[in-house]
Image (cartoon, rainbow, N blue to C red; front, side, top):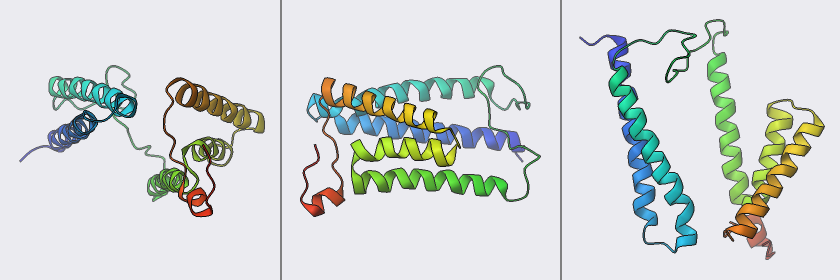
Length: 172
């Protein structure tokens, strides 16, 4: 019978394999697209495949060696804080899952150019409790980055959002 760490090692390996397959599928899917459209999935897909391969190699080398809390050498596992109240980890997981669903719904409804900065601002202000100057400043930086790099340099096509489409408003 396998020890818990050995079983955990197999789960890690399967997860890494799943990530590698997803990244490879992104690269495979994007290969027939126009280069501007394929640029992002290709870059992320190739980088993800390289990282997944390195992580698979690392996991294979480290094998069943059990990490210890506070071990800063090499890849770190996430340890559940033993001081958490019962159910607090589940609540934290649900909260971050709701934030992720929020950015997906916001992007679908409002479009990328509005939803991404809005998400950054709301997460900084409500999710992290940052001050107004930090929240507004970082949001302005995100807007400048998105507009400058993706709109002006790369000329990316922005998803406009279903709300604007339903109202007949052309945003970008």
